[in-house]
Length: 554
Image (cartoon, rainbow, N blue to C red; front, side, top):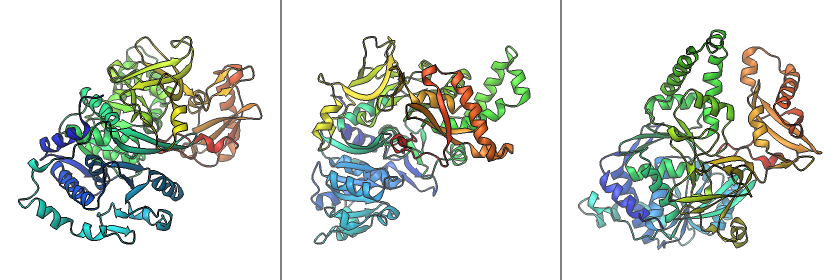
C-alpha cells in the first residue's frame, strides 16, 4: 500500500498553493486559482451532503475538457464518492449504458451532450448538472436538487460566515483502499469493461510522478489530451494539482496548427503527447526540410550532419514553446522511423507504457536514460513485470504486471476479472513483447491482433503498418488478413498529394510501388498481397489508436 493518502495529499496541496493559478481555459483565458478550486469543492461537498450522497456512490461526468470538468472530478473523489468519467466521443447509447451499468446517481454533463441524451433512458439519475455553469438541467420527480443548487451560495455563507479560507480546506477521511474511479474504456478491439481504480492506484501513479522531479510548483502545462482517459487524467489533472502546477486546458481538437500556437503562448514546462501528435509534426515540419536538395547533400558530409541535426532539434524545441524539460509519449505505439530520427537528433523525448487497468502507468524512463525501441523501465518499487515466455529476453510472450497501480477488477463482471489475471495474481496486459535485464519493456504488438502466418509464424500487423506509414503518400494504414493473405488498407495523405500536383488517379500505381518496396523489407511470410485504398480516415479511440475490430471483415 502506498504510504501517502491520496485525499490528504490534495488537502495539503490546496492549502500550500492557495494563491497560485491552477486551471485556465486556454480559449477564454478564464482562470481558477487553487483557492477558487478549493472553494468550489467545498460548495459541492455541502450539496452532496444535503443530497445524502454517500461515500462510494457513483457520479458520472461527460463533456469537453474544461476547468469545471476538473473541479467536478476533484469534488467527487475528495468527498469519497466514485467518479465515472465518460469519454465525450462515446455514442449516446453507450453513455446511457455506462450511466446505468455504473448505477450513477448524479451526472455532470456538457449542455451539447445532454441534448443528445434521453432522460427516459437513464431513469435512476437523481439529477443532471451542467458543466457550463453548474445549473440543474434535469432532476427526477420528487428531488429538490435544483433548489439546493440555487441555495448553494447561502449554504456556503452559513457554514463559512467569515468567508472560505485556506484553513477551512478539510476533506473527509477516505482510505486509499476505497474505489474512487470507475473508468469505462474504449479499446481497439471493442467496447471494454468498467475498470475499478482505488485511491491507492491513483496515489501510486501520482506519488511516482512527483518523485521524478519533472513537474514542480508553479510550472505550466498544456492539457490537449482527453482528460477522461487515465493517461491524461493522471498527469494533466491529478499530478499538477498535487504539486501546485498550472494547467492550461486547450478545449479544442489538437491539430498541429492549433497546438503549435498554444505551445507558443503557454510555453509549457512538460509536454504529454500521444504518438500521432509528434508523427504529424514530423511529417509537416521535418520531412520537408530533409527533402531539400541542399540538406540531403549536407547530411552526407561528416561533422556537418550533426550540426544540421542540432539546428533541426533546436527549431523543433522552439516550435513547442522552448521551455519544456521533455516530452513524454504514451497511449499507443510510436512510428519507429519517427522515434529513431528524434533520438538521432537528441530531441528530449521518452516513451512510456501503461493501460487503464493500471491507472495507467507501468513503465517510464527519463529521456536521458531512454533505451531506443523500448517503452521505458518498469516503475521501481511500484510495479513489476514478467514475460510469459521461456526466454523473456529474446522470445516474445505476453507482458504481465503486478503492483500498486493494478486495478481491483472490472465492475460487476467477475468472469472478466478472473480472466484478466493469472492464477498467481499477475495482470494479463494482452500486449506481446520482451524485456531486457534492466526491465525495459519492448512491445511487439497485441495478442488479439497477432496474425498467424502460413506455417504458424507470428505476424505483428502494427510493425508492418509502421513501415508502410513511412512510404510516400501514406497517411495511415491497417493490415488485415483476407482469405489467407495479408491486405493493407491505406488512407492516402491527400494534402501532400494535392500539394505536389499528383493526380488521384495515379495513387493505385504509386501504392503498388509502395507495396513492392515494403515487401523488400519484410520476411516472405509477412508479404503484403495487395494495397487497397480506403476512402476516409480510420475510426479511432480517444488515444488515436485505430479501432481495428471495425475493419476485420472489410
